[in-house]
Image (cartoon, rainbow, N blue to C red; front, side, top):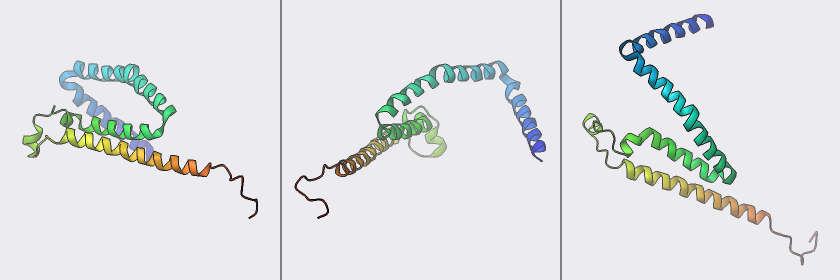
Length: 138
């Protein structure tokens, strides 16, 4: 059964590849190679280095930055108003996306700062030195 499913998925992949490459095979191949090279040689080392730098500092910066970046990647055409057909296709305005993304990013960082402050306060109260005037066992 697994072999049959594997062969069926390969057949579907070959069919999709033939259909995709039928019109502009050179442009599609160039796009795939360019995307792989751009990702592997430029973007991956860049965001890996940024991640390592932030991990050393705090996850309280890393997590909201990651979530904010993920939202920006998903909605960047609307945030930067690069999707002219959106309003006519959806019958919705694209005006509020930048404000909403900035507001959500601010809220994520504020929540993270609040969690950091609570954790730092709990850590500070747990590290109080013992009172020299108290007697053990009393």
